[in-house]
Image (cartoon, rainbow over all chains, first blue to last red; front, side, top):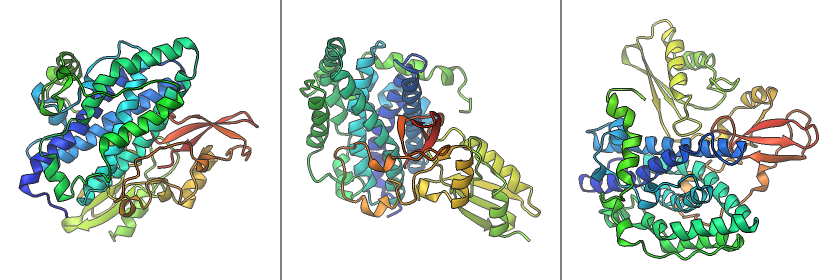
Length: 260
Length: 175
């Protein structure tokens, strides 16, 4: 199957935008740590992963632009109004340069990315499946990286453990915002473009997270997001989103024709 | 006489900007097509998605292929199907990387190789350390090495440390 039928184009773009926008914002947030991460090796690692996320977003924007035919990757990245972004609340909020928050946010997002990319890699649309498989191979290293930090800090001294627990307590209500479905996703599942997992996505995700959290002697209770963190997948964003988007699009706003 | 083979031969003059290996041995040249009116189309499958070296590689390809007699236009496309993997690096390519102390995972070990047909089932469970990541030091040959950081100077490489000769070296990620 190479062509995507007209009725599925919009739902597919919604789904891919949600993945791309999560990565775009997460990459931008993580890039703030370049030069400031706890140790040199981590500075390189975190910067490298920020680069991965932004590149992944770029490849997905490119794919979406190809499906839509009326826009470009750059315009999708920088030229949309806030209501046209599909990111989840967890990538919109800042970390105030709290390393525990940054690493826990990464942990939630990477594990979820791993799952949705696995589903896309099983798509019956071959170019999409190939791209997703490729993104997932790169993403796998992010998961390993996040897990090792969670274990190390959770099993560290009292200070580290307390800060990690505080980060989990702070982000747990935001984390489930990742699972909010995009419009028309059931049609994509039925058509085989985004095959359903054998089990429940939440259960896979929570199971993968809780294994690592237990190993790190920490506690995690996942609860549905409160009302103010719901709606990202339909363009309703947190109070912090406008500011981070303004920052992200600052250069393109000054010089719309700049080439990247 | 312009042919697919002569274009491939020319592409052996184009090196990766960050490693001493040509792009044919690196395995990123997926296809070369001769279209009408001496127009050359080249598909490149990047090592890493959105690798920052791509614009340089693209302009180096254009310059080299445009210099071939009879070429009127060069078109370079970046494709992700099939995805690149370390298995695509040729034996000669592995040797030229080893000479500067960059090691490459054994052929057949890439986690994305052949992934497409089989990945119709979900494999979402845990991802841990992998014994296949054990690497011999390219400088002294010792197997007593350890992973220093899974992220290195470029997106496709990791940093290892040799406990015997106490040197650091780079190892390509097993993708």
